[in-house]
Length: 510
Ligand SMILES: *[C@@H]1O[C@H](CO)[C@@H](O)[C@H](O)[C@H]1NC(C)=O
Ligand SMILES: *[C@@H]1O[C@H](CO)[C@@H](O)[C@H](O)[C@H]1NC(C)=O
Ligand SMILES: *[C@@H]1O[C@H](CO)[C@@H](O)[C@H](O)[C@H]1NC(C)=O
Ligand SMILES: *[C@@H]1O[C@H](CO)[C@@H](O)[C@H](O)[C@H]1NC(C)=O
Ligand SMILES: *[C@@H]1O[C@H](CO)[C@@H](O)[C@H](O)[C@H]1NC(C)=O
Ligand SMILES: *[C@@H]1O[C@H](CO)[C@@H](O)[C@H](O)[C@H]1NC(C)=O
Ligand SMILES: *[C@@H]1O[C@H](CO)[C@@H](O)[C@H](O)[C@H]1NC(C)=O
Ligand SMILES: [Ca+2]
View 1 (tube, helix red, strand yellow):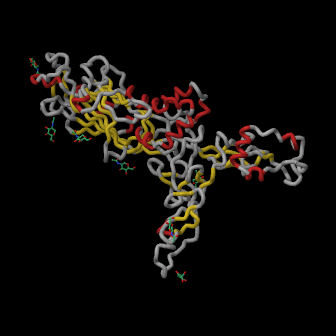
View 2: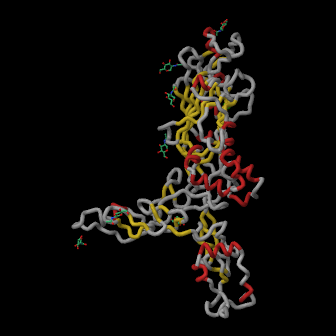
């Protein structure tokens, strides 16, 4: 099976998208649905590369579910259950050998909406007072980014104690996402909180909430949520007027992105609904867990290097572009290691920066000099980035010598204000102060793609046949010398004399 995400995309998070729409036309702030497009420029046909990501989808279709203990599903041997409300109503049967009476884990992920609902159910609490513990682990074997609330719908009463946990490393380590209890202090020695108590500074706090367990709510709300959208709205908060800053923070705040990123989820059920303070030991068949539906919406994490994700042989993987590879497009392809790999960037909006992997520089192979076995001249020992370092060997003590604007142990990273383009180049253009003029477009912040007839660093010059003769035709001469606007002045200040020196196409008389 194979699926492609549609090319019409909402922005990063639907919640923000809707809120931001009120301020911005859709086109102004990024769809990130296209990885590359063909452009015509002075040099002919070429590719323009952009940051891109897959559309969000229902992630429950691509997971593997594991129960612990493995034999915790009801029906083997068959059991009769009583209703929680009424201990005399014991006519619910679970029998794993009969399809209509079986409640296997798959029924948490089927399409709901039919009557009666389909659900997974555990064995009952026969071993009371030993706790009835169940782990439901959902594994994607792929990094995904959550875009919507996680919603569990219980067919039984909601548990009196549970923990939602996540893993970012394929199940090796786990961190709590949220604690749920009828009494948070008693169960987890945590003050009860709700997502409304969180602020922009505490939105990544792990809380215990009593919102989804309190009381014996059998018939009313059966859902337990993990509120992704509320947290994201908090994060966006007052910055919604500035999408660039929002995306910029997503780019740079690793903690924030990691918070919404998972490879696995675990629902730890610790105590079933009892509906009372006392457990009725004569009717333990009243106590069990049953879940009819689990919703997990998200997208494959592809580091902004893919706009589609495929499900093939029970495995999700990004369809990597920009000469990247790996399940999350997390490294450069072989022979494309001319610059260090880096994730795409949401900035500048609306197209972002692709940060494509470039061809590995093919240079003469330097063989170690047998008579000087020290590390000093051995290229292999240092592995300095060929574009970022002064040369590809290191200095006497094993350090790479970095070019201007470059940093990092291998000279593979850029200092602030510089962008990688076969070495670190200072920022030439952007969509704010350093706009390309006359309809030009800024490509990866390092050069302007000029429309025909214009040239120069920022397309500020009219193309002309001869530098000496000036531009002919009616458009020439003083007509171009409009008074410098504020932004023009700023440009001159920022670029300094370089731009002035390059100012061509002016009549010889000037
Ligand atoms: C599940 O298996 C364990 C040991 O493998 C056993 O102790 C336990 O009684 C079993 N539980 C049920 C409900 O069959
Ligand atoms: C469930 O997972 C937790 C850690 O996430 C582990 O300590 C526990 O042993 C697991 N199994 C059960 C039955 O709770
Ligand atoms: C997870 O994916 C990797 C490749 O990305 C594969 O080698 C491995 O077998 C998968 N593991 C499971 C449990 O499916
Ligand atoms: C539940 O309790 C009632 C009265 O306490 C008893 O009559 C009934 O048999 C019990 N049901 C089960 C399944 O034990
Ligand atoms: C990736 O490499 C191929 C050649 O293997 C080349 O044709 C293509 O343009 C490259 N793409 C990018 C984004 O650099
Ligand atoms: C090896 O290095 C030594 C000095 O470090 C130099 O004298 C010698 O000529 C070099 N040999 C070769 C083959 O480059
Ligand atoms: C090599 O570079 C490191 C770091 O810049 C410096 O501390 C060291 O003195 C340098 N060694 C030589 C021999 O230049
Ligand atoms: Ca179901």
